[in-house]
Structures are given as C-alpha cells and as structure tokens.
Amino acid sequence: MFDALRARLYRLGFNLFPAYRGTGGRVTYIAPDWQEIRIKLPHSWRTRNYVGTTFGGSMYAAVDPFHMMMLLKTLGDDYVVWDKEAEIRFKKPGRDTLYATFTLSDEEVDAVRAELESEDTDAVDRHYTVDLVDDKGAVHATIRKTVYVTTA
Image (cartoon, rainbow, N blue to C red; front, side, top):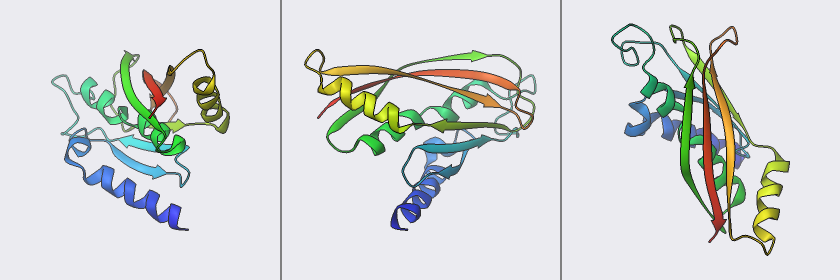
C-alpha cells in the first residue's frame, strides 16, 4: 500500500515539476514496483509546432527521463544510472494525443545485475526502445535510449 501511494506521489511530482511540465507530457501511471510507466502527450497549443503537428522536441522530452528512473528505482542505491545517448525516429506527424508505455521486466533487471557482477566489466550500456503511438496504435515516433549503469 505504501509503495502504491509513493508511486502516485511520484506521478504527481513529475506532472508538477517545471522541466517535465514544460514538455506538455503527463505521467498517467507509475507501477508501485517501477516496472511500468505510462505517459500521454496531448496535441495542444503548447505542443504544436509551426505547421500544426506535435513539436518533435515535446515528443522526445516527454519520454526522456523514464528508462533511467525505472532502472534507478528497481536496482536500488548500490547502482549509478545515467542517460548516455538517445535517438528519435519520426515516422508520422502527430496530430492527436500520443501515448507511450515503458516496461522493465524482472529478467532485464536481473541481466543488468548479473552483467555488473561478472569480473569482465565495471559498467554496462543498456538499450531501450519506446514508441509514441496514437489511440489507434499507429506509431508516430520511435525513441531509442542508451542507459549507462555501474555500481556505486
């Protein structure tokens, strides 16, 4: 119960935080275990560009922090997690509200830990992809993030 309340407070915090609020995006759900996050990016006067479609910067910024945050929260304080690089592929102009769902499986978390526990490496780069889709499921942009993880 406490984890669910904490997740709701984080959702509220994201939505009130000026840097995230400025993207136009809104966090709609954070799982108590931080293994799923959902966001929406409304098409509005705040996110619209000169030609009337959703601004690409809003698309990217709305999805930017979540893979890093999910890893930080699921791995715990013994790990350092940073965003390392990103790539966005625009596929279709956004003229409606867009949505993204981020997931992080137990197997992925275990794989990160296992790779860092091996003697061959002291840091790993993990790659994650998320799509911004409309309510019909059409992909408008695909974002690929590289996240750097090491032990503290």
